[in-house]
Length: 264
Image (tube, rainbow, N blue to C red; front, side, top):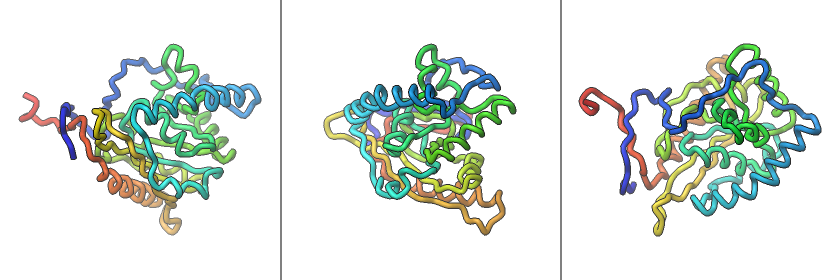
């Protein structure tokens, strides 16, 4: 793996450290936050921003900036118009919003996101129509959150989740993550897929090529108790992502665990 011109980031906690680099003050996602519905007006705004505005811009950005490609996308094809969840590694502020959407095109994709993603002064009012579903901040909002997930799955849409939860830019390994979010595909009895974003060296550019590897479908072992089903599904997807992450060939940022010795 090439390590030319890499920088170093020190981390303390693989589960909770965040390196997104933004300074957005997140809005509170409470019972007053509107997650959307199936009304004509909401569907029109969603179609306008999702298909007419964002889609062509995103294609140009993905191809010109990162020369992005998918590998093994064929496994999605039999499920393209069916309800499903997909899980990916969280390593790029912009591309992580685009890749799961293009993986499922022409089906509509919704991404469970941090409230930061709906808190920007202007863009934050648009991102919900692009598929952003922010995590709730209280129990009342949780009910609305669960209702919109149920509605999207009922409509045979795709819901994408980044189980690592925090962005580590250009990270080339898979961080440990909990099995909490894997209860959704079990609850709704739908398939899950893994998509693993990797960075590969380009001959005439310092910007790496992004290659996304797709695996699945994955299902939990229904012979197990519910708690163990979650762990089983999590482990299947985690292991697939770890294997695919070995295809990284360039490391732009080196992540080192902070110790007393290296951080004096």
